Image (spheres, rainbow, N blue to C red):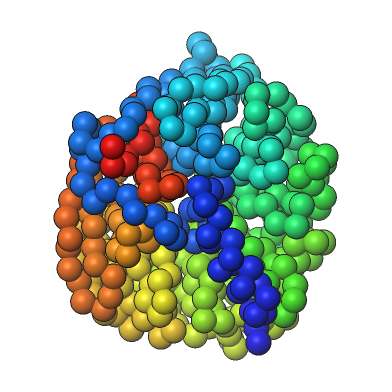
Length: 408
């Protein structure tokens, strides 16, 4: 089998770690909040257990572990920035620590939809790994925020800022570093903060910058990093950084995290003209002519990641068109307008799909091949970060606050 039975069982078992939402899009980085029973209704006050102001601006999602909530932010200091990490008590919202990770003398320019603290922290084994793109990565103590190491060796010229979150696998934090020139992917040793490997992108593209969060999965017993980039998608050996196989497709500014299932990897390859591609896993070298299974442009997202539940793939375009297609074939089941613009990724929770737009409106949609809207909720403010879920509660970040939504 392409994806080993052992890796599938590991994913299933790790889904049931109580109370943990340890990285971007959850413990398995797939947008599944397994076992949650969060409220179906909320507002700025309804079912809000606590609401805590967060200084500065950051579009990183909250990460949750061992009774604490972690997030990053960037606070303006004159022309510069204070890049910060914050830990709060999950039950009360009380701040445990608020640490400056790095001071920046002059803030680099970013896209209007971006922030200087967009990558989501990773929490593991008593440590919090925070990433600020080209501005640096650090390992902090989960208990008091003390810096355990700082890595400034992933230097690259970002375009519009940074966005991709690190993914921790086999002791390495893998990350795509697709800047305006000389794009590369890399792995940082989680124990030491040293760069384990750095691999240049193998395609020379006219426009090279992207913001993708990689996906790591096991193919034929080998951990592989999947990272769309400039004019191509590539799979890399997590241990060595060797490029194993690739698919050519013109594109740039890639954001959505690839989705893996049914022996396929599904991803978008271009921001301006988004198109989903489904590619059969495996092979070696250039597999463009042999492994592409289906392609779909209509309704494809430029920013939100796709969500796979069973045989169905759910996604929403940046302009608010939600879709459900057959993941194996790309055949459309439904396509409906939700309203608003979208950056946050959909989440599977409470047996239904949650879509959150950029102005605080969340739409519940029924699971399945027939579209059914089940309700809407709203909070004030901008909402570009994907919500996190833990122990029957939702943690929702706006441009000013972090909310805990749960039944009181």
